[in-house]
Length: 135
Image (cartoon, rainbow, N blue to C red; front, side):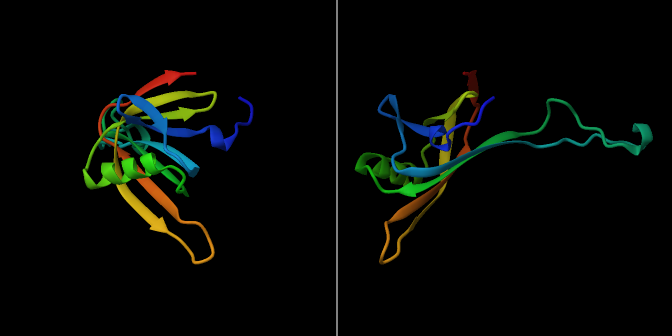
């Protein structure tokens, strides 16, 4: 796979039945996690740890930071947080595919300096099963 443009990693949220990019994002990140279930016993070969395949909780997290650009998506982010909503999101990963499913905004931070732009940071956690569609 060739090098990719970071700006092509997009986070989109369901707004009235269609997915819209969260406006003003400058940096985005997605991570996938799977908890381990250790089934090591005294009989484990050579004392090596053994893990139970297919067990454990899977999760994903999204984060992004940016500047205010669009009143509608800014309002949507606030609405999701204060309403504890879990709408559908799409994450477009260039030349890899699309991850889609429900996420909840777990934190939202606003910042600004007297001589700069107002910025925000979002963190989201998966809130159900995710699907992956290869590019």
